[in-house]
Image (cartoon, rainbow over all chains, first blue to last red):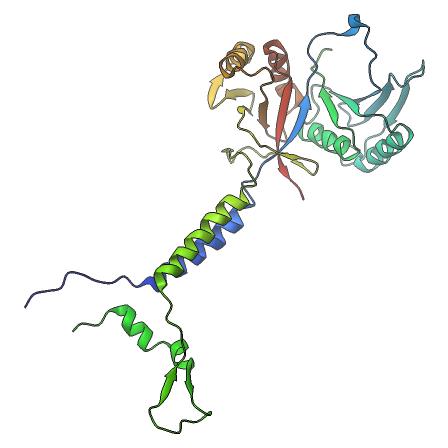
Length: 148
Length: 164
């Protein structure tokens, strides 16, 4: 008797596997998404060109987790300075956010910020500072290298 | 003749049994069962599944760039992040060591390496994606900023995990 070599695959388990694969892909796709915080660095010095600098916020992250905020080129001769003291957990993000919101309400044309962290400042805090600034509609953010 | 496993599954399927309708609620004639179950072609089902898989794969990527991040790096989180749309060169910082596109580069060679990258790409505004651990010090990032300025790179992107 001739033995039949053809056989049919049971497709139902294949469909089960496909369904499980869809669920797996849907769940893991959330974890592979990456975002980015964009920074546009200024190169060179344009002070000699005579161009008027836009109003800018300079935020210095100190090693003791306090944040010094100064406003420059805001159309007045003076430079406004503020200090946000550190909390027990580190940087006082709530106080900083309120201060930034207040400054943005006073100066709606404020769109530029420079972050000046100290050498021992935490990288995660620097990114969080960028995040806070972007949330306050300050879109042009720069990072200052050390020793400048 | 030998029955296939598929035919046997169809014959004894409880779903198939449930889909047999008797006329008038009860059968007037014994054995006059009408089979209302449409014949589903499994090939077309698999086609539909495959299309769904491809659609989900394409749809969930959001057009963003895929990168491999070592498990030892914990990226910072951010809410106001943007999607990485175009493929960019990656600089990774791992405990004071620098990797440009997976190739280890010393801190004092970073400027030259980034300049070569920019020259090879032919783009005037070549962006650079920086991956670093959230617990590292800013001093570890500083050489990249200086090297980027040396190489004339203006756009820096810091990789984050979107926190929405």
